[in-house]
Image (cartoon, rainbow, N blue to C red):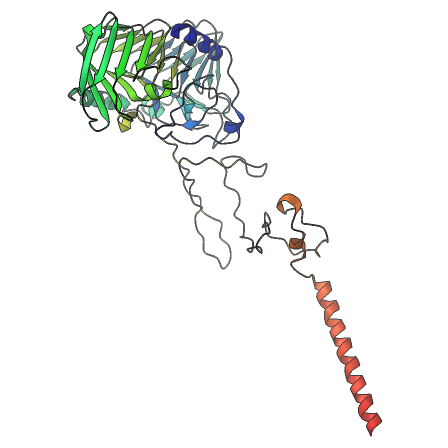
Length: 467
């Protein structure tokens, strides 16, 4: 069942891609999901994550009918896209977690050469038209050898940068993977592991230890396992499965249970939760194969391994050696692991404050930077999304119950009896009558002068008549 579902959703993403939903197009995506907000599989981007989703320290090769890689893809060596024709999506995918880099950010970084075979389209950041940029950007240290098509949807594309510049600020990420793998591998188990008939069960036996549940299994025992079950996992706790030994491991995932529920089917309410809470640490394994066409649930840490993948993966995927994907409609979905900071979601960096133009008799203050995690304000024709509108003088506070105008009125013409066109909603006609023009003032003054003259004349006549 899982294999059929994986094939179905893979075909949705492999040849075509669903347009961004109205919410994202309007700039409604927000930063990293909070606990309890981890989404299942969907079509619309919802959260931004600028951390690495998929890392290959060596070469990265796409063959067969592989469909998509969601999130930021970083390759230390060469990247080759030589699938059997069609589209390979990077960054934003047709159906995934919806946790992706910010619009316009780097979504593919390659330290070596990038090659795209004839008949293949690499589509980066499709449909991302809100935020500070457009599409997704590509940075390549070596040669750009594009015989097919590289589509960045408005993002930048640069080749010949050199490895360090192309991978910056992630050029030392391979070292981070090794360090974290060693630290996690040194933790003592907090639960029991049982393997029987191709199934592995991980059961917590004690209280939460720093919100991290630790299990241990030998590489020889996990090799060939296809069903995984996680039991009695405390609420909110992350899970790490330390795989010991250097033996090659082959897994063809078929079913995953999490606290009594099936979690690897796309209709499961536990799908995103399980994917974001589980990590397998293959610290010393030299070879890793994730076969079949099912869903592998959880992140993979394999600093010494090269990997061959036909299954779909759901979590971070970090491999120190080469990584080859050649399945049928298989995808990698970006679910940050919430167990340690280096592999968690990284929020979008707010733009640096921009200086305010000087104005006479007023101090200059910088605009406040955008608060991380808040939706962006949709742009206007004058101020596109991601730009800072020109500073305006604040309008006076209106009387209670009235709506302030969009900008202060300009006293260059006499007021019109009709409501100001700049007033929101066209209401509040009183706003158009808040000041008198010069003509009215002159007329009033003249009337007062005439009245005063008439009064003086009348008093003078009365005094003469008495005399």
